[in-house]
Image (cartoon, rainbow, N blue to C red):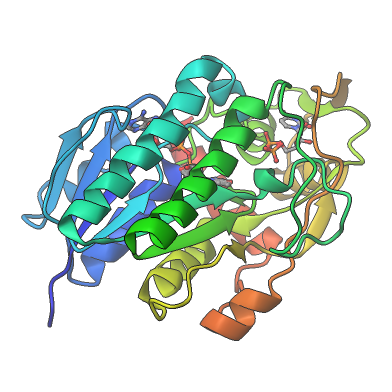
Length: 312
Ligand code: NAD
Ligand code: UDP
């Protein structure tokens, strides 16, 4: 067996911790780098005794040198309330983090995968969104620090590939949920589950008619690893998401039902630039990676609810 050395930036976060765990289980040596802005030790504490796991406290806006074979670049807050808390830091993390990690990949000849996002499509005018769609993004709005940061990171990945032959992979991740989301994360699935379990009001923004397509974290991790392991000539960008689309109101009703909650739905103002719809076109992932999601929303919600019951 070949034990690869793999760096996961943002490895103590929600997605990163699942990815580190899976890569370790597959027999690799994993270096988890994080500044703990939104990540938590709790997410990776069960991995700390593994001799093939190493935790590095570091901020990706500063260069870092390590000999590795592969890099998964996930470092970046993903929840709107967290990435809007310090927007300048958010765009620095995406752009300078990408430059530093690409520089590292170039120097040590590692293959590098970027955790990009469906937010590169902004408030889309094409539905569902294929990878060839260039998006509809406000460059100066509340979400721009994240959306434009991730778009610039994609540009940097492409240019390091074209100019310096760095082996890159770009994955556009659609809304993902599951155990280890922070209870105060602020994203819709964790908010609704926490509110429902506490029998508090469920806060639907706007009229709840905006749609999202929710992917369970295990499906995402599978897709990311398949992408990393695909032929070097296939660089993406590639959508990884679950095309089953729901309105936010439907999600609220499902969560209330599955938690048997007494919560009532209340309506709050819709944040600015909140995309009205989002659904991935995953034809490319099916064709190139033979990947499609396996976990239905209800099944994933049940697992996530079980997790939140243990922590609140
Ligand atoms: P998360 O906030 O749980 O994880 C992000 C991790 O990055 C945290 O551990 C945080 O502490 C760390 N981090 C942030 N800034 C850093 C910095 N400057 N230096 C080092 N570490 C830093 O979010 P997540 O949902 O796990 O998202 C992981 C990645 O996937 C992000 O890049 C995000 O943009 C992308 N993504 C996630 C989703 C989703 O629905 N979960 C959707 C699209 C894209
Ligand atoms: N949302 C909501 N109530 C909440 C949190 C979010 O109605 O308590 C809505 C939000 O306005 C958006 C959708 O749910 O339309 C998804 O929000 P999230 O922050 O999870 O991710 P986004 O896809 O917007 O980045």
